[in-house]
Image (cartoon, rainbow, N blue to C red):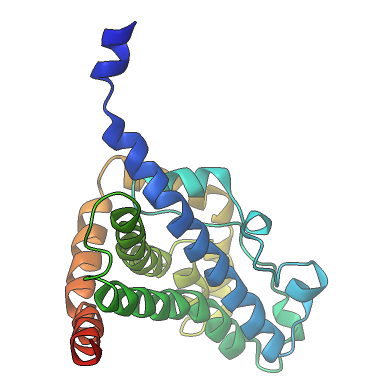
Length: 224
């Protein structure tokens, strides 16, 4: 029995634990961004259904969470939006959809700044390392969440943005396949068909955005 426990790869569990809180942060703020934007544009559906909440379990989708924690790409339970309440349905739907990925890019920038700012005081082992790793992981996963969600496959945000540039007839034909969208996405990610390009795009953007972490590091150096 001792040998079984000694041979377990604890890095998998540690990696999952470090990812759990960042994933909850990413999906919660992402969905709140959708709901708040929709509310600003005239649709109160998300507010009326209690989805303008920082309680992550109101936005929790078990499969999407598992995919985010272990694969790096996933989804949350979509915030309900009634585009009939928008003054300009096509435009406002696109803005509401884009608000999620945009919020994730901003979240990534904020956590990269904190990572750089606190790099020196959190450079030790144990709890400091765990906090630093979580800051870094939140920044990366938030950016990955943004990249994944701009894929124009229903029900991801990219398909809603696509609605603003194609005819309504074409869009509604596309949305007929929404029920199969998640199945298609899981297959594409698990088989590696899209995970390679998504990882490459995320890493490229992350490298460009890492300048924000360098700004945080320089600010700490100037102050202390």
